[in-house]
Image (cartoon, rainbow, N blue to C red):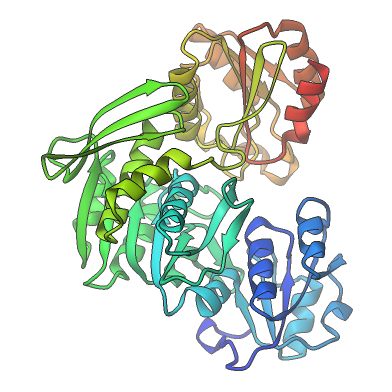
Length: 474
C-alpha cells in the first residue's frame, strides 16, 4: 500500500473516478469536478435517488456495485470515499493498475480550496448551519464563494458551489479521512479564518474518549497560520483550553460578558429569533434570523464576527441573515396536516437532541412537543451515551424511541438499548415509549396526535421516510 506522503495527485488530470460516489460529500465533489470540466465516473453499492438522479442529470456515469471493470478506462485519478475499505474490489484494482489516488478532502483542497481564503467551520455540533449561514452571507455580499456544506442549502438548492470569488467555505469534519489516512478530514485545509463551535466526545467508533477528540482539534488549531483568525465559542471550558494554544489571533463569541463578540440579548418572536450583539462591550447591531433557538443565535454570532472581519457591511449581513432559507433536515418543517406540524432534524448526539428540542420549544411554546428519535450513528447505536440521553428529552412532552437499526454491526456488550432509555425516561416522569420499527411509531402517532401538536423527528438517516408516510396517514 502506498504511504500517504507518496500519494500524489498528478499535475495533469482529465479523468477522475470516485469510489462510493453517492455519499453526500462525494456526490457534491463529483458535481463540482464535472462543472469544472473533468471527465467524471463513479460507482457505489447503493445507487438510488436523489443523489443518483442529480448525478445522472449532470452527465456523470454511475456503475452499480464495486467491480474491477469500473476502472478499465484507466482514470488519471481515483478518489476513495471515507467508508471504502482496502479490501474493496476497485481499491485492489486501483493498486494493481498503479493509478494515483486520494481522499475527498485532498481532492477538494487541490482542485477548489487551494489558492483561496479557506473559511473553515469546525466543532462537534453546529458546523452545517454555521457554514451554510456564512456561505449565504458571502453570496449576498456579492463575493460568490465556493463552498461545500454537509446539508442542502435551500437558498441554492444544493450543498456546493465552485465560486469565482476569493473565499471558500468548508465544513471541516473531525471524522477520519480514508482507510489510508486515519487523521481528521479538517487537517487537509489551511484556513485563513476558522470558527470553532464546540468540542465534545463523539464518533465513538474512531475516538477513544474526550481527550482523543481534543487532540484532533488541537492539531487543527496548531495548523493555523499566525496571520489567521480563530473565532471560538465561549460555551465550553474545553474550547478555552484549546484556543489558549492557538498560534494565531483568536476571539471568543457567545454569552459571556468578557467575550469580544457577545449576544447581549436573544428573544424569540416566531418566525424570528432576534439578536442584540455587542463588539468589545459596545453595541454592534440588532439582527434577526428565521431559525429557532439559542444555539442558532450563537451560530449566527460566529458568522457575524467572521463577516465583520471580512469587511462585509453591516446592512448586507443583516439582509443575508434575514433571507437565509435554512437547510434541509435542520429543523425543517416537512408539512402540517390537521393542525399537526411535522419537523425533520438531523440531531443524533445527546447535546444536539437537547438543543433541538429546546429550540423548537422557543417557537412552539404552547404546543405539545412529540419527540421521535432513531439512534442510528455509530456512536448512538453504542452504549457510550446510554445514560446521557436520559437528560436530553426534558423539553419533550411525549417521547417515542425506535430500536436502533443495524444493531448486528455493534458488539453485543456495546449495544445501545432503546428499551432501557425508555424505562429511564419514564422513571424521570417522562411519557416515553419504545417501538421496534418505524411502522409501529406511525401507527401509534396517527392515533394519539392532535391539533397543535409538533412532531419532531430526529435521526441522522432517512428514518424509512417516516415524515412523508406520517403526513400521508394524518
